[in-house]
Length: 236
Image (tube, rainbow, N blue to C red; front, top):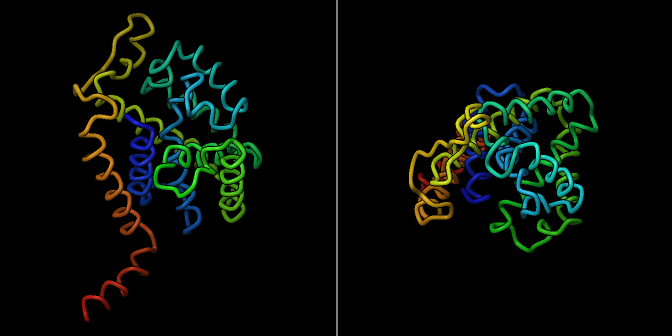
């Protein structure tokens, strides 16, 4: 799937899982949804030299090269529905224990989401290395400064990775059969849809937007703010 489809589906799932997410309060809910949306891009850091890996210049491109080698190429190890979430989630377990490392993970999630959703953001500052760094780190600092230590980061990473893998599974390129691919390279493919196909752009991406908005309305305090406004309009 295209990057923005991954991010939008991640935001939708993040909003949908809010009733079960280990977060409390509006700011923490925003942090959870943003994290799942951004981490839904995380498995694509296996593609050295890609747009995602170039997001922060050498700060992301160098680790991306190492991730790609460990994963044995694009859409292999990081796209394994068992190994991918466990590997990234394990790093998040360590990161969540310290403020600065959790800030890094949260900034990475926000940066990936901004990079993927640049087509709906005015200007191009989020596509520049410096601009993305400033926006993502400032956003991460604000969110974490107003919430308890995010021990939920591993869960957000795991959910985001699984959303990404599920998305790639419905394209004809598929994803590796969990664990089996290590001995025998084989893939799971649910549909013959090409990445970037008309169905993805015209149906799936808009559906993800609608789902994200609906679940944000249903699972956050947005309902209390929106309902009186809607009632006032209907009364007129």
